[in-house]
Image (cartoon, rainbow, N blue to C red):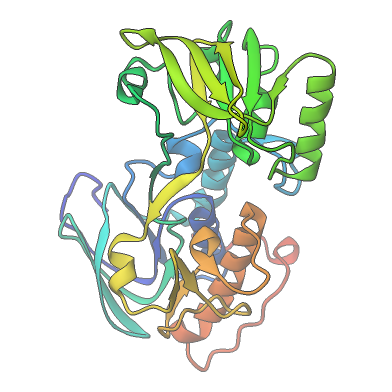
Length: 343
């Protein structure tokens, strides 16, 4: 396929919408079952948020990797699917889905047409953007880089006085990751308890106990102080009205991402807020032949972990095999005994 051709027609077994880590692994699982596939993503590069937002973010819960940076994980996933020579339509947004199980047609905003027997939606939570704190003059500080919502390079914060706001995994993980790089790290949260992985929260407490990080609790952001976009201090306030001024030249507010499923929301799938309901055993949606995996999928007991998305990719691929090859028995064997099928 010519990547420079803006209008492409592809016929394949499986169309995978989303080329983040779970979408990439779905391509591997399809390849292992000899199912052809194509990856489609609105971003210009594969990797999803791992590539676009935080390539240096440490990830601790991928089996076999005590720690792996997000960008490095994408590189390994790319290496894993390389033997299958999976075609991609990047910088394209899927706008249309028509047809039925075994005979779908998808259309992109670039005019591409993809004909597939099954569809896997691995679109994360859809289009994403940061939830911004309601602070005066915020735009000026965003424009100067004093306020940032993603950490692409830790070295950008060397010697900086950094205030991190939030109580989830991103806030805790970056507070730990910037130790030894930032000159000072202060974590602002409105309650003593963090909504992060217990081990990470314990590491943050230990870092605070030895002076590597200062916990500013219970406070929340109140105002920014500086001139011409140059941040000098972050003002915080407690629920009782007590105020503190924190000297800082960088603010990292981690209040989650606002998400939008976009055209997917109009495909007639059974939705729960911004997620797609699926059958836990197969990840099939309410529309036969369409499957959803990763953060976009929801079912009782769902965990929003990359490793669970990997498992869902395998289940979806196995459920798709009889759609592509009806009546053909799948004699599945362990990859250790079969190896990677020849391209």
